[in-house]
Amino acid sequence: MAKLTIKELDSLTATDKGKTLYEDGNIRGEVRVNKSGITVAFTYRYRFNNKTREIRLGVYPNMPITEIRNNRKKAADLLSEGKDPALEKQLEKERNRLEQAKLQSQLVADEKRITVNKLFERWEKLDLVNRKDKGKEIRRMFEKDVLPQIGSITVEDVRKVHIINVIDTVLSRDVNRMSKLILSLMRQMFRFAQDRDIIENDPTSSIRKAKIGGKDTIRDRYLSEAEITELSARLPNGNLLKTTECALWIMLSTSCRIGEICKAEWQHLDLNAKTWKIPAENSKNGKAHIIYLSDFAINQFKQLLTLKKSDKWIYPNIDNTDHVCEKSITKQIGDRQLADGREPMSGRSRHCKALKLTDGKWTPHDLRRTASTLMGNLGVRPDVIEKCLNHIEQNKMKKTYQHQSLEAEQKHAWKLLGDRLELLTNLTEKNNILVVNF
Image (cartoon, rainbow, N blue to C red; front, side, top):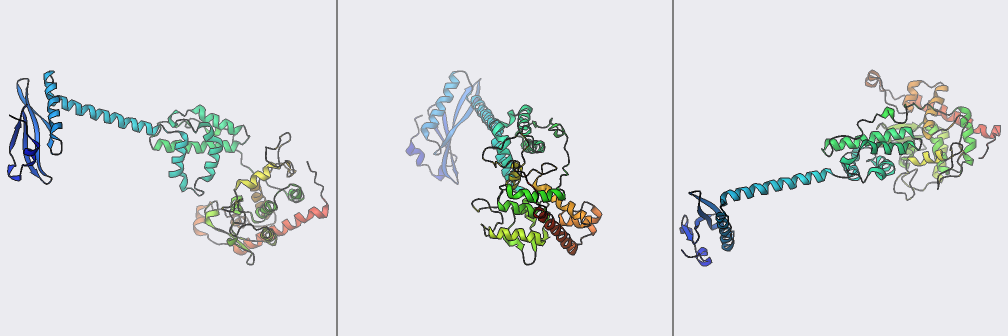
C-alpha cells in the first residue's frame, strides 16, 4: 500500500461516503459526509497482547495528513516499547485532566489569598456602598487605623494578635468607644470574607467588645445655664471660624445633629416661613424633619448668609464640591479643650484651652442634649421634646396609633428655647463675665 496523496484526498466526493482508504503502516481512513463537507477519519490498527486494537489518529482536512502520520508514529513507538497506545492515550487524557484540576484549585487558592486591602475594596464595593454615606466614613477610619497596620497582610494570615495591635493603637489615643467601633467594623469585614469562603475562621471572633477599653458608659453631659453663658463669653476668644460659632448656636437652638447642620442646603431653609427642612437622607434615622426656627436661630442663619460661599451648601467644603466633613466642627471644639499637660497636635489650634467649661469637656452632640434639657426645664412636655429631637417612638402601640405632628407645640418649644438662649447669651455683657485666656 502506498501513501495517500493530498490530491487524492481532496478529490473525494459525496459518492465516496463510507469508503475505506488504506495507507502503509496499518493506517485506515473512513470517508464521511456531513454538514461541514467531506472528511476522512483516520485510525491506526494494531495488535497488543494478541488482540487487535484501534486508536484514532485525527480527521482530515481538520488535521493535516502529516500530523495524522506523526500520531501514528508516536503510537507505533509506544507499541515498540511494550505499551498499549490506546491505554497510554487514556492515561494522558487523565493526566491532563488532573493537571487542569490542579491549576483550577491553585487559581481558587490564589483568589482566596488576597490582602486585607483587597478585601476592604471588595467589601466596600459590594456592601458598604449600600450604606447611607456609601461607606465614606468607614473608609476614613480604616485608612487611619486599620489598613496601615494590616492592609498588606494576606487575609487568611491575619491572626488575633494583629487585631489586638490595631485596637491597642486606637486605645492609646484614649478613645475607648472608637476602639470598640473599629473592632465591630473589622468583625463585619471578616465575616463578609467568611461568607464568601475567602477564610474559614474570623480572627476577631474570640475578642469580646466588653473587654476592650473597659465598660461602656452612657454619656449624659449637658451644659448648664451658667455654662451656656460662659460659652458665650469664651467663643470670641476661641479663634474659631465665625461659621463654626454659628453652627454651635444653631445646634443648641434647634436640637439638630451635627451631621444635619453640616449637610444643610440653602434650598431647605425658608427664613420667611421660619422653617428648616431636614430631608430624610440627611437625618440619622432616615425620617424627614421640619424645625420651626426661633428668632435666635434665624439670627445665626442670617449671619451665615453674609458669609455665604456656596449656592448649594450652607457649610461647603474648601473647593465647594460637597458639604463640609462632619468631623470638622468636632475637631475644632476638641482642639480647644485639651487636658492639662497635653500639647496641641501639629497644624492644630494653639488656643488649646479656650473652650474649657466649668463642668469639664463637652462635645457638639452635648448641645443637642442641652437643648432637650433646657426645653424640659422650661416646661415643655416630654412627647413634644421627642418630636423636636426627631426621635422615633419606641413604644409599638403609640408608634402604630399615634401620628399627631404637634406642630404648634413644637413651634412654642423652640421659641421658648430661643428666648432662653437669647437671655443667657446676653448675660455675658450684663454681668461682665471674666474669661481667662490660657
